[in-house]
Length: 239
Length: 323
Image (tube, each protein chain N blue to C red):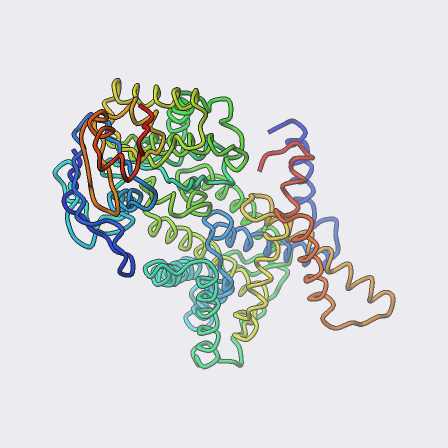
């Protein structure tokens, strides 16, 4: 579904991503992991149209999305969350989601109904009428997910949405994504440090280090890869 | 809406309709001014309050709207009802051009505000030298017999202008509340709150920002046409003056940016307070030139310090009303 082919991006001579390639098959959940500064978010931003890669290509559903603006990428069917959350602080939680839902919904009232169902799914139903600025960080992360889901994406990019969640909350989120993946056929590409979530969700893991893909495979393959253990996970892994 | 709110609205409506019959000409002219500022503030609010794009040069649209309709009337005898549409189209084109330039090159925030001032100033200087509209000497409309209502050329007694402004203000209020509840309203507010996040949700921010500017400039053009036919004389130094632009935005800022009633409440509160101060000082025998401006400054400071969201939001909560 998404084919990233040898993309590179430098910022003033600093190579953030170099020659990174990976695929996200339709219907899969793929995790992108790696130490801080490995280039994960830069990869996301290139896929989402925020940055244009210096070289390489990104194909989504056999369509070249290079040079597309973020809004065009979203319309093409890729939804995203931001690692540093960007809620519409002055609007209610529900209105935040309605903005996303209006991409595909014809009227504001149908967007409202759809948005409420998404909020319920993410356990934010009770907080629908609060101002987004009054939410705690874990709730804001959930709101990011709700807003992205409201655009009815076929591929969802999740940037560290588990960070700051308690283990039980994390398991709940994992359940939500698993359910979306199974019942709606949503394809997910996630950046995550919480290995508990990665191991539970991902069918495939791609490891980035210094902007390069150093390993990829099933979760159990990756966590036993000596190179990954050395640079990222350490000797005692969570598994 | 609660019954309390409905009652308040009904009382206010009757009061506003009966006003010309119960007050003297001075108060009526003040009421017309309040409505004029409320309407123009509402138009500005579409751009800044809804879409978050700060214009500090809104007198550009007032001026161009006024000059276009007045010049057409004076030179070709084209009445205000046709002139109105030409003014609106002209201001929409101007707004679109400025918006296109700014948003195409990613100019936002303070720099966008500076750009709006710049365009307003260019235009002022341009009109100073435009002989067709009388240059800096001004353009004058013949002051006709004021007792009879001549709706076709928008001539009549002060009460007619008052009612015209009342209709405009109420229409703008209804139109803006419709806008705010529409897809455009949601998209504008999203852009205002966080443009990057809005874009990530599939919103073509360029197009929607441009729409806000075009709607706002079209509404402001109507203020200009009213201005021309109400005051009958136009001077570039006056109508395009930056202090005029500031005057337009004081109402919504003090009343509450982004709210529907803020611009109306702000315009009323500010004008009434400023006039009372001048009156009281006059009665005491003190003539202090520029006291109004000093007063505006003080009110601005107080509102920013104690009511940063304007006076309408806390008042609305107290009255049990919505936005």
